[in-house]
Image (cartoon, rainbow, N blue to C red; front, side):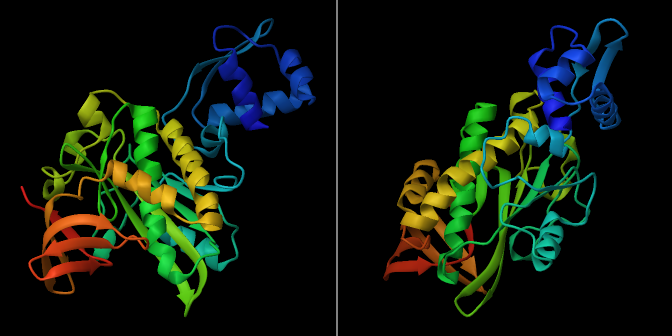
Length: 321
């Protein structure tokens, strides 16, 4: 009900909308309309009211509240169930707990702030207010060897959402970073629960630096990280980005599960900043140096070295400057 009332108020922001008009449109009582309006106000929406004229939406809070995410979301499965937190230790941790309890595919966990966000290789992730910190629960009918492809898919969906909503075209650094002008704009952490070749579930975690001022970054990353706010000087619509991400993800995900990842890999190559570059791939105390020439059908990075082509399934990539 809140989502429907909010949608009506947004459609009519230039005028007052009477409670009677909304109750007729939605086939509910005027009391139900009033309760929904009061609930929206408690969530931070500024809604003016007049005894003879009705309600008018004056301001929308910069929050990733479920009602805001659902308003206009065009997906069939992803994001239909949303768990929202003002602050949590880690959205991936919450998503794992929900997965173990039997939560359905497409369940979304989103937070305004993480107290103990994590990136790849156990690194901490700076997660202040203003970013987009989310985890998406999937139960894919895929083999465990294909799970890394979902990291690439998530990167493509994030890149396309950023281009569509923010007007910025980021690059993808293999396997999981979005860069803009060489600085990190977003990171992806996928975690799998599987036995042998049976995948129980997969969590796709995204940390996207949206409305974060440059001075909010901790000193350790202040020279390597960036945000949409730092790039453009203006705050972005975070809920619009999250809706776009879910829509792009769903548009690629279900066809890929049914028919393969060729389309995803093609789009990944389109955004890639790693391919064609001299790189160092570090993993488990070893380093592979050479030119990144492509990714294969499993998403592994192919590096041309003096000894031939090396296939990298995981690792930390450093681009030669």
